[in-house]
Image (cartoon, rainbow, N blue to C red):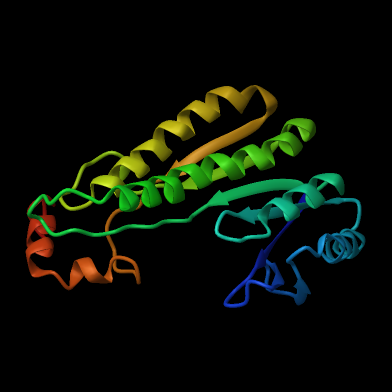
Length: 212
């Protein structure tokens, strides 16, 4: 059985999305906010294009506001559903150990951990019905190690690791796999502020065996 993997990307415009093919063979812009019919039409046309011998896999990504609509439509049309949770929020504090504000803690925990659970719950019914599906959670090295100045973030990422293992145990019997990727430190838009702090870089490098 051949497989075609597609997903919807909002880009900078939360009111519309581009239907993307993993092979890069098409890009179709559609409306996504309260436009269930357009998503259904786009996927139905794609099913006809790939034919009955190809399994259409639809990737639902946690940062996108239309994720639940896509999950529902994909399930109704008999597509295989893959869920990818990548959302992340962090409020960096210096290494002086200053207490966090409650709203900072709540925002990080709810965004990084709560959203993973909520979208998983939204997608799981279709996966259970199909008795197949994939959930991929993006964690971090902070899922297993603590770092100064990052208490809420480390707690949320550790929670993602534990949630992943629990959901894998809950849903494995339905043919659903739940895994977590935990990349180490590298420069991104979110971590840029950390790399600009020489004290933080020295602290981080000191914890790496190669000291670099």
